[in-house]
Image 1 (cartoon, rainbow, N blue to C red):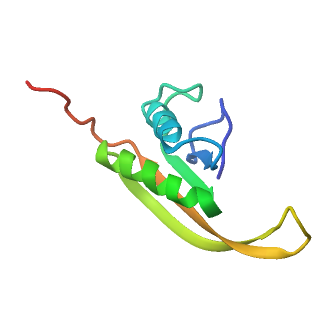
Image 2: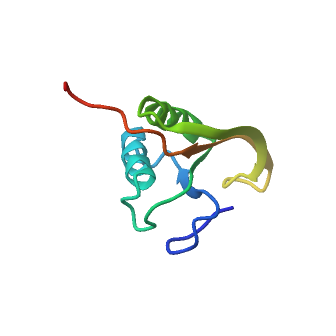
Length: 111
């Protein structure tokens, strides 16, 4: 259930993770979005999606969000068939989808 900016906050906001950007980029974007600082405003949930070589990036971002105190709502793995860009043959690639909800903010620094 993907939604666009300005849509009602019914389903999770989806980040499609690729290998074109670093895990640090996606972690920063995910933190801002889950904190409600993005153009979509406050969100109920955030979904990270990655295929193939992007799966390790999703895992890295998920680990960052968990360490920040956010909660897994759902995690799904699958093998999906995609058409290759070189030929018209179909290949199976792994897919990882992880859905998070905002958790309690972690305390930083000494009190």
